[in-house]
Image (cartoon, rainbow over all chains, first blue to last red; front, side, top):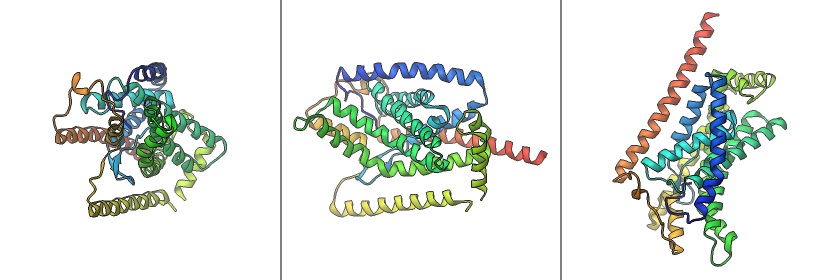
Length: 232
Length: 103
């Protein structure tokens, strides 16, 4: 989903930077607050960041004959919320821009917007919404992780389409063309990513359910129900 | 069933690999050069519109000198992430076992 360095003309790269910056600053504030509240969250935060690092470095082949990578933001988005995720995601993107020449400093705003902000936001809201509707927890995690991934690529397509509207057909034609490159490739990867995150959540529930209780990922009665479901 | 999710994930991964093998065989039969990154495909499409990037990573920072070094850096990135995840899950697992034994 990286927009490579130099591939966004002004004023678009400035606009995305201006939109992303307040989210990152607020995310940083939230992150500090969460860690001041309880140092016990630190390992989970590390794991959440680790998954973004690992999954976003895996380039997997897909249906369209090109390769793409998952985003891995779901664990962080569901447990810590989208604001904190924006900070972790931006750190990973910065690392990749500086040491791997994937993405760049000028396009970092746009890339952070898609992977670290909008994607996690959609996943988080969907998770909360389906939680209220009492959808099965694991189904819910799957849908949220699937959307965290897929929405990222839709936003990237949107960012490129709005900067490069097609000569014939304008924004819509261009958007569809970029969706064909980014989003279609991503669908099978997003399914795999969703399943992987369901597994991760299952094992965290087995090993360290109290962290999710404290972070209000679910309530106490819901946890009993889940543990019964796992042991069945 | 205790391992329902594990089995489901395994099946999905197998389907995914089968899909790759099938597509790859088909593409090599047609002589199509494939499996470029979607980032590069997107960048090529923009360049085909007549746009030229106005800045490059090599203008201000380190760029991996070859594909080999790039994949080395990607592997290191994944290894550090994997180590961290394995360490934390291992610590949680040990903690849980200790708690169980003390009761």
